[in-house]
Image (cartoon, rainbow over all chains, first blue to last red; front, side, top):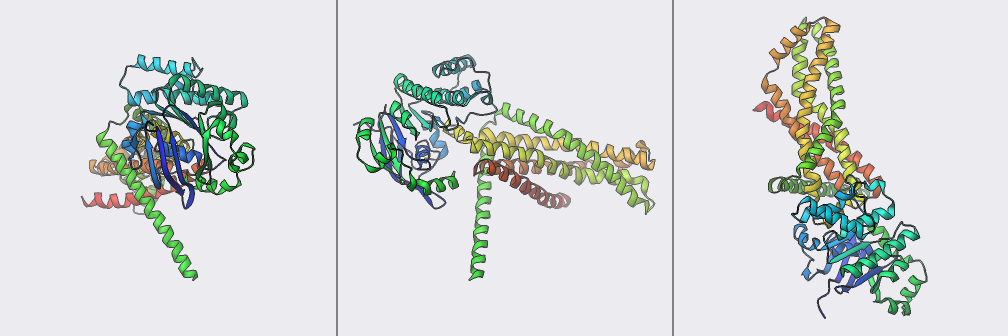
Length: 260
Length: 260
């Protein structure tokens, strides 16, 4: 088996004494779409942020695209991040910049190309997310769903090998949530990237995932393909799919609020 | 036991302050390194200079004008007792140029610009825009901190020159209207008393004040935690800390400059 795109090995993370991750083991193969499911505050986003170096593990190892990234300093992460794209929960578009400037941001940061080439690429990315012609608008003028899609356009601008989606459908109405799910599935097909999706939205999870893992109590409690997980008799998986509240994860939620 | 508890609490507080000072020094060091090794983003720096300068001109102008006027009133009142009222211009000029204009401009700038920087960066932190910059392989210190520090450090001296001029003019108006000291005589006493060294020693301090205001503003903004209420808290702390730091720095800088 070829080396996984991402491998987490016994990753621990605590915020001010509150343990959020308690030994996460996970290997995500190249080209697959992996979804991390879990209740609110179960540490899904914390887990994702370790994969792009926004958080540093207290213990354990993190490998990204064949590089041991556990001890990398901020500046050493740059070449890896150049190969990744991330879609943030609230889109995290820069308020003071237009949609065009937002999507052009990673291009200007990493490519030394003339403005017409940048404009071409920005237009192509906005086209890919179904938002042609919004270049001159400011993020504040866009709806929540449009902002998320511009966030996706910005994440795919550099044609990444890895895309991270942090709660891509949270806060959207069902129609927009479905649209985002379709967009993620389509991008995965078209760009043949490795995608990691963090969500508690089962509809999105079943629509886009090749495999999924359930995060509970700071560990991956169960893991498998969509079919395997649907047929699983694991009590946590059954409880999660049945919509039973993740009471045991409240501690992590508190810890996370302190730390982030 | 209660003494031990109190001592323990003091210890924890002291450790927290030491840690915060350490973090501040690290950010200041990173900013200095970014300034030395990498080109500050020119467009953003100019945009910040314009925003900082234009935003603060009115408040600095009004403060300086009225301070000059009240200084003229008070000084003339005091000098009358010694029969030296005509020399009001010299004392008003010296007080303004050496001390009042730099410090008042800095304090006004702290309330206006320092608070603005903290609120802006704090909002960027809680909406994950700073994480987005890092995730795209860019450096928040170079993109956000450096332009603001350069802009405020260069703009405050310019605003102080404006404050010097308007303060002396305000004093002149009152001297003329209230005490019938002709503008010509007033200006002669100003130019007789105030020499270039006075002007330069006042101006030199403003570079340090500008640096303090912007660094504290950026530091508090980037250290924001706890959502939107955290932004408010960080902004208040930023203004209080920067104001006190400016006043303390003023004493020591004046002490050093007087011994030169």
